[in-house]
Length: 166
Length: 166
Image 1: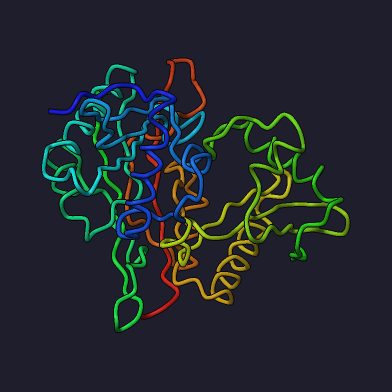
Image 2: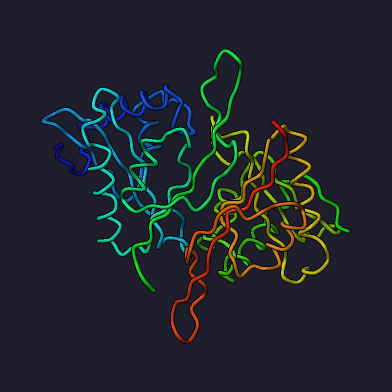
C-alpha cells in the first residue's frame, strides 16, 4: 500500500505530470490540460492536498475541502488522480478512504462529488463501495474524446455520502 | 415589464447593492456578503451578465455561461438576483426566459442549476414553469439563517433543462 501524506513543495512537478496525463486522456475531468505547474496548482487546490507515494514516486493525489462557501461549507468535496501505470494497486481506494476520514475528522456532514463521468465505471464502483450513492444524473453533460463518428456524450453523476445524523 | 440589457460599467454599484441584499438575507446563495464592488464583480461573472432595468433603476440581474470547462462547456448555468422591493413583478421570470433563450441561441445543449435551495419555493416553481426539472437533491446541504433553536438545514436541488435532442 502506498503512503498517503500531505503534499510537499517538491511533489508539485510529479503531481503536474499526473494531472496532465489524466487531463490529456480527456475521459474523466471537465478541464483543459494545464500548461504549467502553476496552472496545476491553481486547479489542484483545497483545504487539504495529499499524495500517495511509493518512496519518492508520486502515484496519485487527492484534493479536498468545502464544496461550497459559507451556507454550504459543511458539505465537502474531493477530486482524485491516479497514474495510469499505477492503476489496479488500490491507490484510488486508499485516497478515497483517506478523504472520507478527513471529512469526518473535520466535522463535515457529507461529501458531494459533482461530476463523475458515467463511463468511469471503476470510479463509480469504488465510490459506491465506500458508501456513496448517485443522487442525480445530468444527461449527456460530458463530451467524450471524439471518435471516428464525431462527438459522443456521457452522463455526469452527482454522488453523495452522508457522514452525520441530524 | 423591465428592459433586459447587457450590464454597463455604471450599473455595477446597483448590482453590488442587489447582491449584498440577497447575500445578507442568507437564504438563497452559498456565499459570503461581498464587501466591495470588486468582490461582487468577481462573484458575478459569466460569458453574459444582464440587468433588468426600469429607467435608471436596476431591479435584477443574471449571469450565465458554461457550467464547466472543456468537456462540460456545452451545458450552461445561470444565477439570478432580484431586488426585494421589486419582487412579484415578473422580473425573475423575464431574466429566466432571457437566460433560456441566450443558452439556446449560443448552442448550449442544456442548462444546469447546481444549488437551488429547497425552501426557495418561488424559484423552484418558476424554473419548473420554464421547463426545468429537479434531477437530484443534496440532503441538508444548505444552512439556513440561524433561528432561536440553532442551525437548521435545507436541501439543495440540482435542476436541469435540456435544449437539444441528440
